[in-house]
Amino acid sequence: MRSMPIIEFDMLIAYVNIIDKLHRIASMIFTRIVNGELVNVAVPTSAYMEYELILRSKGYNEEVIRKDIEAFRLMKNLDEVPLTSSILIEASRLRNRYGLSYFDSLHAASALLYDKTIISVDKAYRRIKGLKVLDPRELVGNVG
Image (cartoon, rainbow, N blue to C red; front, side):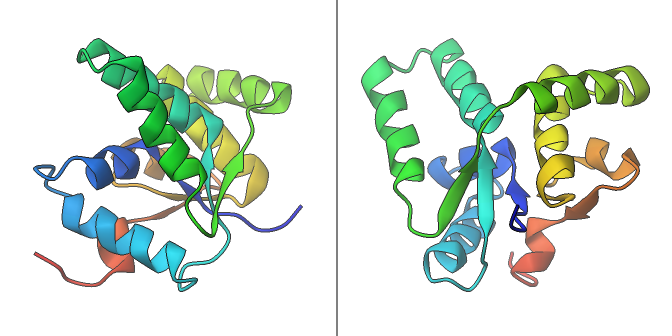
């Protein structure tokens, strides 16, 4: 399987939300992905699931959510890591060992089983043995 760092849910939300404190960073990250400067980056299916659930809970309609997910799916150079039973099993182990939330455990398991690298600002991932965390702010340099 080829090397694929995972980009987590927090960057998806930051990218679409212009008032998010990480919007500028997320925009730069996704621009670098599209331009081929950051390669082999993937979104786990679980991040799309979390994205959908959060937006639905905030009252967004199905068409808006669907268009957002389609836009990410069609983004050049951005792959997807499908949710598998192996990921579900590893996520369960991670929840048991580290007390992660359901979706954090799915994202971490996806990363561990594919590249062992996740792009996220979530500090919970730093405790996981064998998982490398790339802070998106460091990937783009000092941007305020």
